[in-house]
Amino acid sequence: MNVIEIINKRHSYRGKYLSKQVPKDDLVKILEAGMAAPSGCNKQTTSFIAVDDSNILKKINEVINPPVCETAPALIVVLTQRINAYRDRCFAIQDYSAAIENMLLTIVALGYQSCWYEGHITDEDRICDKIAAILSVPENYDVVCILPVGEAESEPSIPKKKGFEERAWFNTFKG
Image (cartoon, rainbow, N blue to C red; front, side, top):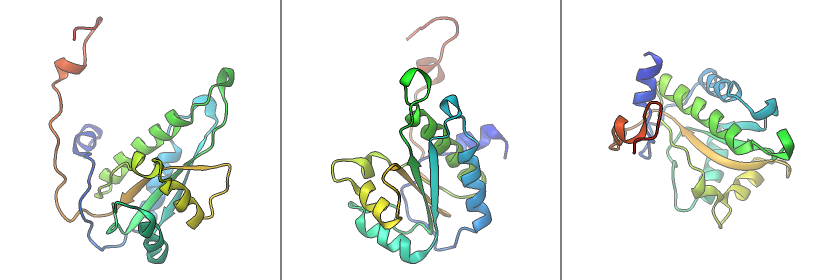
């Protein structure tokens, strides 16, 4: 599969996963893809925890309400540190966003599916703090996202995208 095929095949998958374990080698490739992402002023504010232990997955799934990704055999927990970089600006959001996209594309390239869950876990009920406690995440890190990883039980639904002419132009805005 070439890069364009991978990009076009990536969609947020919110369905059930097959119970097949994700090999550690594949999880390492996914984590390395996240680590290869660009980072503002090379501050490397993004870190990851791959969870494939069924007991830990069960504990995490017990605190996620409403439930999402409870059948995923693996989960990537994305962490960030709020470190100022250039002119006292923090680029943590850009850093972890780039890392997440790299990982999502790698997940698809390896034959798995995923979905970027952020608002669901960082909302007012602070599920992220509960996940951080389960995983012994230090206070100077924030859990910002979870990515379930596994083989999809069904094909992801493909949302309708706006046409090229509605979102991309040459030389001047034409919307």
